[in-house]
Image (tube, rainbow, N blue to C red):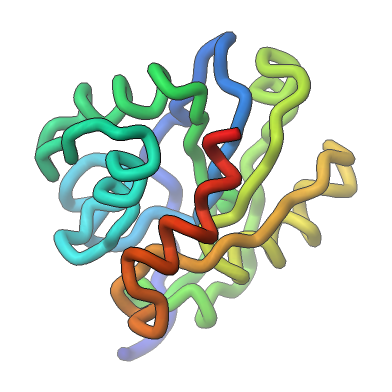
Length: 165
């Protein structure tokens, strides 16, 4: 995997005044950075999961507008915890020197947000880097990454159903 590389997060958060749930990942993967949007790896189950949870068609991997519309129409905000870090490839467990996004504006614009992490590492980083300033707790959900092969889609849907309530 080589040495960690410095990465700066390339995407703005997705949210509007109707967002009631915030889903946080760690930092955009190489595949996401190459595709120009969150969860850009062809085998990541995030977009099929969101479509299933909200009874909508799965957006095309390249259709950023359709992905944003799916989220916003259903009250879901999306961002990543980490603004910048050193990381080996897409390996969350290799993250070093993490600097969090300043989430104060997002939380001010969307009072009462419930916060969920896409995976344990995102939750851990949020608790360490963001929670002390924001004070909003986070609930860790199982990762949609293809590396989390122990969770099939049916189990993910059941665990993630909390974002729809």
